[in-house]
Image (cartoon, rainbow, N blue to C red):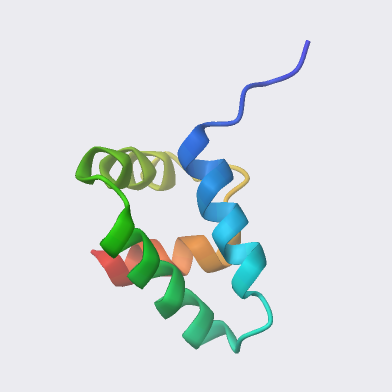
Length: 70
């Protein structure tokens, strides 16, 4: 049996993977910008809840981006 990865985690980690070539601070800012512009508020809320619950499996750049979004 495989564990289901929350879609917000998967998508945010995909964004981080695509921006990993940038310096960390800029990558986190770009991730936050993308999520802020393109994600539905409900999706952002689920990402925040997931991060608040420990964010198991979230890329560290996504965690940094979540902090910038708040």
